[in-house]
Image 1 (cartoon, rainbow, N blue to C red):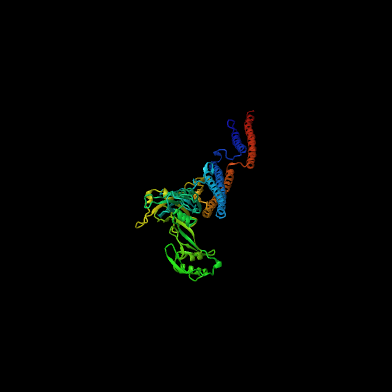
Image 2: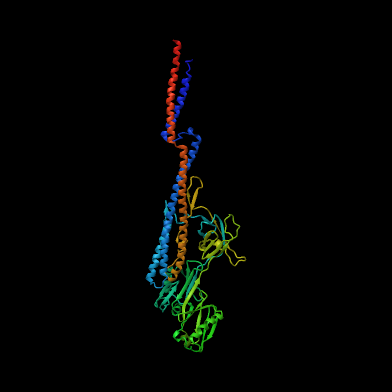
Length: 589
């Protein structure tokens, strides 16, 4: 028996110390609620929990980002909802304006309201913002670059992949240009009252007006019908000419200049030299069986091709079929149709030389037939651009395919392909440099063409980071919304004809806005699904990290109670062990 070294006390004290440390650790877990308070508690678990915590914070922020994205899309879609409502109102007004019962003041009011709505659409497109970022002015749209100045990709579907696309232009679009040549000097008085109708807009001519007054009225009215007027007089010509040039703002087959005199008298008084485009034979059904005076009628088309019909002894009813058969059998470029109480003949040609003439060879025959020239007219139509898809020798892997189809309308080339592929390219000749303009030469052998290459990049779109890691993004493409991109920048509703054309333009604009809204709706649905997914991921990841980090209070309390008992037992055993050396005193007594 030894007294210098109390092994029992040392052993008991060691267990006491270990149990005390475990109690302290359990107390820490119970008071903090964490199972991992330092890396020594579970180094592997601490590393896993740290990575999970990073992911949770990233998911939380991504959730906020996606929610902000939903708000952004809703802002844009809300603005487009109002734009569409205004377009619908404009279309309603255009339908109203296309009706011939409207007076001048009513048509003016219709035009003023439509113009105000157009201005508001443009304002909304320029000022709709989210967090100081404009949404509808094209800044949130995919970037595309062309290698020719004056060429712009005005629209691009989401199905167009990044890459290079090329077309070749063989002829530029042209506006319609008509020249009104007056056969009199500016100081001459007209002397006849009448009406000069230009693209459906009436210009009233008073008998006391001079030619200069009439020219001034024409030039002052041209903005109302989207025409540009300029002086085309040539004092050096022999004889000198006195003329106005009228040019459309538009290009292509939709660009038309039509000038109509209300009467032959006004036509002669102005010295315009317009030619008839339509003529009527106004038959009277009450006299349909009356015998016509002796004589011949001659019908002539724009190519000076003529046919003469002898009507001696025939009735009005007889010659209706004679005229139809004569025109058809002799190949005249004229349409013949029943009209009111007679027949109307209309030339199939267009332009200054488009004429139709029907004459009786005596006054008695003219009167009996009721021959009347309906319209004195000058009509000029613009030409569409001519272009085609270029060859496939450019870099990149997403060029036009063999199934791509290109159609030209005015100065725009529209390319469509499978799976929703659509690209519209606008060529503005007046903005191009002369070097590029000179590249087109249809007279060369072979003809020279202008090659235009467009590069589409996956840049410029609103990028929403909707994940905890790099590359977890959603690109939101918001196309430009403007009067020009909607195709209603040159819309004119001051005339019946203009209102009719406006209906087509507005239908296209409404369709485009509806398409953009549908795309934004798809983005919103996707982002809302992303928000739900992020919330679920964050919830599940939080549960996982809780299992690693958080204390199970019931389990830990059980462990703490056990450790408390062991500590008390260890304390008692240390006390017992410390008393054992006292038994040595019994040996010494």
